[in-house]
Image (tube, rainbow, N blue to C red; front, side):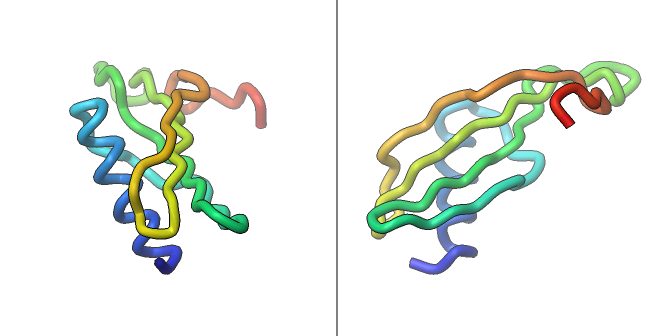
Length: 84
């Protein structure tokens, strides 16, 4: 499986698990037996949108694109610079 296909499948899995569409893919890594994709999701929309609450999910896929793990790493307010 290629990197773009891993991203596509990770986004699909996150949407299926959370019921929310992904906002952005912020990381992609391949090791010997799995792909790891970091995906940002809007968990709470607010007005103004600069105060939306987002979360970063780590999605692990095997070489066939099947989900082997998914966890929320952290939540943050859009536009915050903590951790940068």
